[in-house]
Length: 335
Ligand SMILES: C[S@@+](CC[C@H](N)C(=O)[O-])C[C@H]1O[C@@H](n2cnc3c(N)ncnc32)[C@H](O)[C@@H]1O
Image 1 (cartoon, protein in one colour):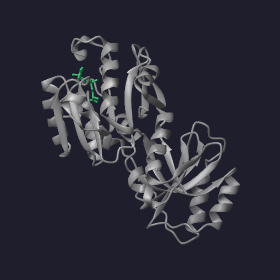
Image 2: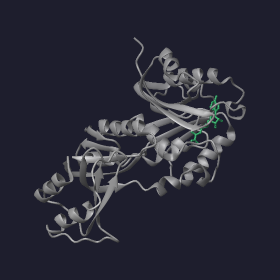
Image 3: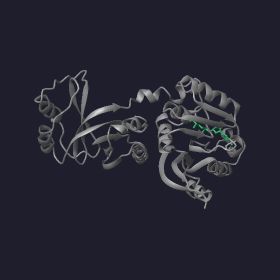
C-alpha cells in the first residue's frame, strides 16, 4: 500500500490529480483522511506519481491504527525495511485526534530495536507519521520540493508576464487531462502550462494571438530544457485551420480573464465560446480538456452545449475581484 500527502489549498483538485495518475498507472485511491490518501498501487505507479503538482510527498504505508498504542503494537509486528539511518517525523494534520507528542521517540525505539540506527540531522530514510482521524506510519519515497516549482514561477522565467498560473497548478491541469503523448495550449501566453507538460516528456503545441508571446514562450521553453515543441501565431477560435487535419490527445489552457489588453479586442464570453468550440473540433474522441474560467462564466453549461461532459470542477479565489473554477471536460463523440 502507498500513501500520498496532497496540498491543502486545492484539495479536491489535488485528489483528482492523484486519481488521474493512478488511472494511468493501474491503481486507485482506497481511503482518505483529510490530506492523507491511501493508495493501492505498486512500483509501476512511481513514474506517474512523480508527475504530481499538488502533492507534498508519497511513500509506502507501513502501519495504520485507531490509536497510538495500536500503532506502536503493530509497528513491533512488521519488518521495517530501512535504508541506512532513519528519523521519525510527525505530520499533525488539522483533524488530528491523537496526542502524538512522544510518538517519534517511541516509534524510533521500536524501529531501533530491529537494528536500525537513528540519525536526527541527516537521515537516509524518513519515517513519516500522519495524525488525522487515525494514525499512520510509512516510509517517504519522494518529496516534492517547493523550490523546484519556485524556479519556474513567472518572475523567475527569462520572458516575464505577470498573468500566469502557479507552476504546481499548471502541472495539475496537465495531469488532469491524463495526457501521455502530447498537449495543446491554444492560449499559451508565456508558456507556463507548456513548460510543465514539456518537463513531463510530452510533446507540446502552443498558440497565441500575440507575436511577442510566441517568441517569449519559446525563450521560456528553451530555458527550462523543453525541446519538443511546436508554437504557432494564431487565433484559438480557429484551431482547425491552424492545425489542419490534426487531432490532439489533450488540451490544457488558461484563457485571459477579461482585461482589454489580453482579450485582443474580443468580447470575453464570445471568445470563451469560440475557444471551447474550436478545442472540441481538434480534440480526439474521449480526449480531455482542463481549462480555467472566472465564476461569472458558466463553463459547465457552455461546454456541454458544444458536446463536452464535465468530469470535475474546482473553485479558487485568487483575490477580491477574481474567483475562478478549474474545469476538466471530456469530449463525447457526436452520434
Ligand atoms: C492568461 S494568458 C495565459 C497564461 C499562461 N497560461 C501562463 O501560465 O503563462 C492568456 C493568453 O491568451 C492570449 N490570447 C487572447 N486572445 C487570444 C486568441 N483569440 N487566440 C490566441 N491567443 C489569445 C493572450 O495574448 C494571452 O497571452
